[in-house]
Length: 88
Image (cartoon, rainbow, N blue to C red):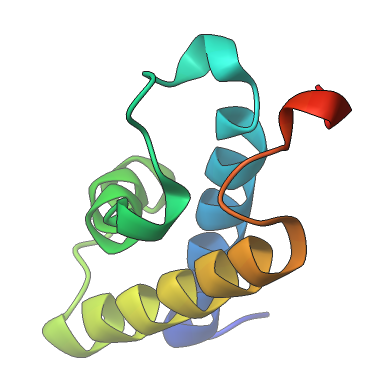
């Protein structure tokens, strides 16, 4: 069984990855949306409360922020700040 911190890490990874993939669809984002300027950390913290049955500690929230930013940056590095028009 995962510890609470491991659960928070896994959820932060999943939430940030799922949101990135969702936002690749232009229907779900505005014309000025940029992956590089989106504050994924706040999105993950807000969504953690829906996913887990306990209140997170400050340390767990900081870990979730760190994991979310790391995965978000990895996706940006891999795919870019959005799909190029020719790939849509």
